[in-house]
Image (cartoon, rainbow, N blue to C red; front, side, top):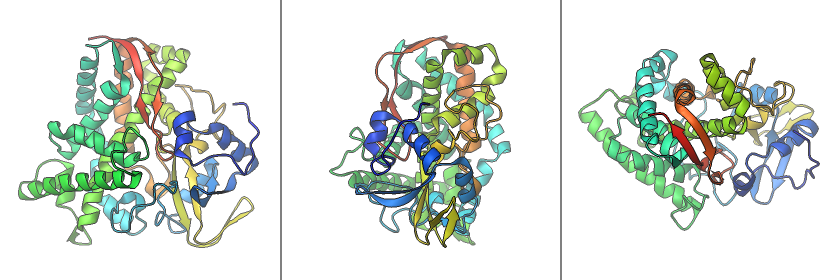
Length: 411
């Protein structure tokens, strides 16, 4: 990528509209990595923070959960979307040790490599059924007709949510993850939108937990609803927040990686041809898709003591923002980082995070992506964009709302 000159006083790393209109600010991140990789970012529309843009620094901070806390600032948001009120939600993403480990343990056995391998046939079936339906149309939207259907079906079946309610999960995740987006903001303000979506989701799962406590099933709602932390049932806020996290994380990120992955293959036809010729490239292609798309853009941490990093002093109480998508283009780590290569090796990407907070569902995401692209390489005869790709208005998750395409999928 050709480096652009930027004025450090005005470059934009945090405005959701910037991400919506221009995609990820890779040019800006590249400038920061090369000129001021621990960059003090202070703008009127956001509380100040240190922008951490280098791969090694993101790993270093991510592996020190005692020195850099998730609370009270889980991620960087602009001031029109203030952080949720204290007590509104409490889940793995805003917990610190020792609670984080205790709550993660409630469901961790569902997401081990062994447990995910046992889901192989189920995910293959879901993917096949969705592509069977998509084969019946030639002009569609890959988000609506393929990626959203696969990811919602997988997480909904794991949770035990009845099929008629799957559309509700899709709507709530959009409103929670991107309440500033005009397509998803259904209340007067972004905050009212996210609050209402959270309430609706909480009420839904509160009712489902009551059912599973009376008659447990082989699903995650039964596991969490009947689970314990410190010998006690999960408190109401933590209980319902658990489901909010699983629904959002289990759908939103993988859906966007799947959509972004196909877009990358369409933009790099030589790589698509390479993948179609060699099924052994599916696994490395999945890793490259995660590196390339990096659906979770950033998380924040708060320093518990003064910390020196590249000649800068991060003071106690100051925020750092870990820009994972920037780390995954770090020229010191990745050869030719702005090239999309399905056979990239090595590929030490940090698309699933790093340290104690590494993504709980990373193995599940890989399984879904693996089946999607394994089946697409066999069944997708042709595919091209038929309209503009529309991104979500968010600087937290790199969402794709619409990806209109014309395709031919073998029945």
